[in-house]
Image (cartoon, rainbow, N blue to C red):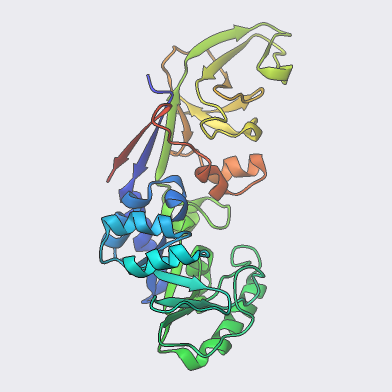
Length: 339
């Protein structure tokens, strides 16, 4: 028995791409597949996104881009993070495009100048006169998911700064802006989290027509009854007040089920059940309402168990929940479907 199984549904990725393209109303969709496509598998997701009309792929590093270049020899690939001199040479040879947020612009490689319009991170304070190697101008929204008023200020700053460069590809929008701030679309939108069916607003993804693409399942490996006063897990954080059935699931924080997810709910035999006690490296406990057999399916994520709900319990965001799931084949079986 594998400790757990991850299933990535590329059909859901395709449908989310369709939803985003409809929202963009003619602007290009650029698929953000950095960090192994937020844990979903960069090569698989990139292929699905390109097949559904994405015009480019976006990653954080040159090595990420080179892996994709091996699989997609003619795709447009933008590296959004900084690159060393050696990596710039590799990018030039592989025909990658680079985001540049500093004054030194490399020669012989297509460049997107990154303007800081309010993110306060990577980016130029002002745009230099674009050289022949500049093919795009970009910026990054800081609050598209939380503060529309500030996002509108950034959109206007970007529009004003790039008004003379409409012949270049201008891109600003992320998933949140693509879905709810149409003025941010410009020529292209770099969409990541929504492509995977995760809400950029921390809400139910269905509210924006999104479908989670990741399913994470395990099963009950042991079932026992606690008497009143007995506990489960380190630190005796859960002490039974009455006769209580407990199911032990062979997944823990070494697999990416975080230690701060105590109190969240998973589905056991299709029913929501609370995670109780301290989550350990290799196991977690769920409180059951009755005795169930060993081998009963447990859904840790997907099929109604939302990353957004886990994130609220952990005090984080859904991005971190899915990026933290580990697909080490020695512990987890990973499958890809296209349903």
